[in-house]
Amino acid sequence: MSKVSCRMAFTSTIEAIAANDETIYMVCTDSRGSVTSGGFAKKYPGRFIEAGIAEQNAISIAAGLSTTGKNVFVAGPACFLSARGYEQIKTDVAYNQTNVKIIGVSAGVSYGPLGGTHTNLHDFAGLRALPNIEIFAPSDGVQTAFITQYLAKSNTPAYMRMGRGDVDTVYPQDEAFDIHKAKLVKDGTDITLIACGEMVSPAIKAAEILEKEGVSARVLDMFCLKPADKEAIIKAAKETKAIVTIEEHSIHGGLGELVCAVVAQHHPTKVEVLAFPDEEYKVGKSHELFAYYGLTPGGIAQAAIRRILC
Image 1 (tube, rainbow, N blue to C red):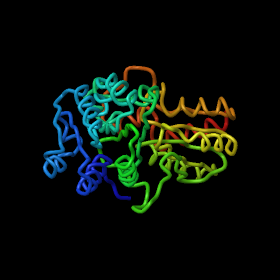
Image 2: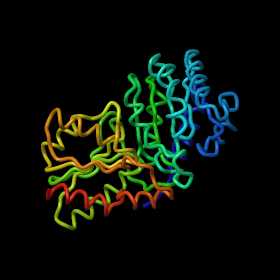
Image 3: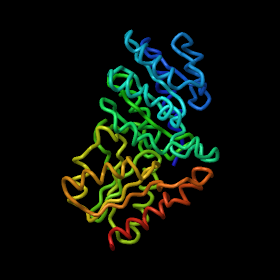
Image 4: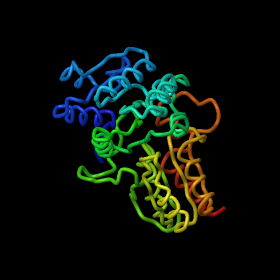
């Protein structure tokens, strides 16, 4: 299975789109290396704005540019854009419904060795609370490119978060997606695994482990968290015995709580939320942290069996 980073998929796609669309602009926060936006800056210097380490300014610059008919992408580390720029996202982007697309790279625990200041396990929670903004968490490069193409055509404010390193390719190159619908990766009848972002690949591998144990697992890729596909969640609650959610985010305010709210209101069922706990996180590389907190194929499979049996 080939690997490619979502950030490279984003920048290569937006560069290609910008070649035929002069309204595409990019604002960066002293992060062209992290974002891999150096190619865009070189090809389109007049449409690349370097805001420096000033996320608030970057968001407001983008919002201002959008009012002049520009289609603006703000790209930088997710931990800083979603926290330091929150007020500007709330007021300048969401409240005013400006055509700004916020691209948060190195999300989750991608910067794990740098410690708590660089973790980004809060963005779903904070941004889901804002009106008028779509939220995406692609699982691989193919899906990232598809969402990027959608964002370039859309006038709706949006936030797309992705990790830093290469990830498994989940989908074939020509895969199509319904942008506001969860992607059924694998059907199953015993339990449903709902994942987003980098956790989709481990969920698929967990389903393979469960299959060997005689457990039929459905896998849903909830790559669009807002607006969320409530119908897919309700269908899973009705057709399988339990649900396990998997996300690279805090247990508070993310995919797990989203799913719990939907099933509680429409079809109560057992739900296990696999995410980062409400505590100060360990410091380490992302794969080390995933293993420590049970966000691995084996950990997911164990949680699924636990949910079915309890």
